[in-house]
View 1 (cartoon, rainbow, N blue to C red):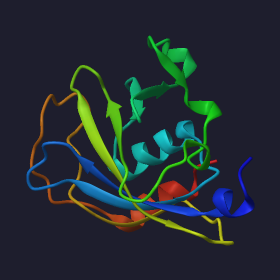
View 2: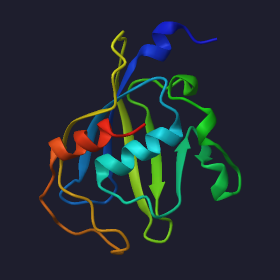
View 3: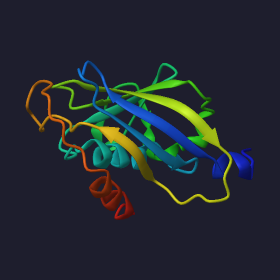
Length: 157
């Protein structure tokens, strides 16, 4: 059984798009009650993706995805929160998006902050825009609008 402190903690996560040079990255904070399905939508908004492709999380050798995707050996991402995963600081997770273009995101748990303020998610920082959907590869845009990202996150339900 999780304590209130575990579920009300804020998880600070740095997301980096693998093999992007210069790096395309974001730093977010989400609360421990956030399930992986919601985290997927948060990642879509902060990275600038359009949610038009399948995705999967890989955490501690286990795969998680939405049950509608019917991915083999994948657990239901809707049924597990960050707090339930027993994450620790400096742990790396993987978020795969668009299996054809194979966008791999490294998620580094930078901090777990005990907090009574569970208002989240929020994007704290970031650099560079992701490539357009279905582009097939990395490109080098310097655009990133932190205010627009946080506006989109406030509209998540």
